[in-house]
Image (cartoon, rainbow, N blue to C red; front, side, top):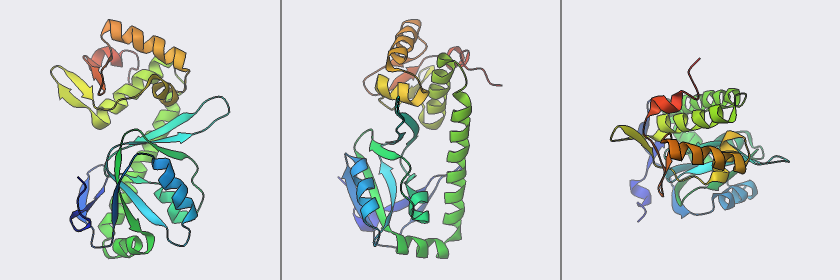
Length: 227
């Protein structure tokens, strides 16, 4: 059940996440196809909106001639397509829901009025966008390593961002297909299948219906030692 518009809050993600009440009109909804929202945002030039996730996850995909590349995965509290809306530019990538997503949509005019009155929200947004840029730059740098290195860095990053303690290991509550793992690591699905099968047998990364378990982070980190 979705919260009412009156009870919704704006969660601005940064190094230290902060939640703000939103005293502006918002629209809430469950989205199964986030790309449909992005297509609509392209058309609504006279009434653009700022979108924030409050439940679910979205992958940002950049299409390439040989394969798609998943640039990043966004979760609750994070804005989607904000920079493009700010600059009135076409969206450079496609947002696709990995799971059913709850979003809030704030009209651009009301959102800008809000951040003018609450400069701390602007600071949090900038901090969050800076953190995402740093993460993206690190991922691009990681792409120069071997496939095992890139996949290890992927799972270590996911563990850091959303991992939960589960016994002596870490549970990542995100179900990804082998194709999505390949797109995130910049490799082929066949290679991703081989590596994940080997890691499953060796107890490095275990695949479950609701996500992944890393029994021993140190064993996974051996494939991607810190420089």
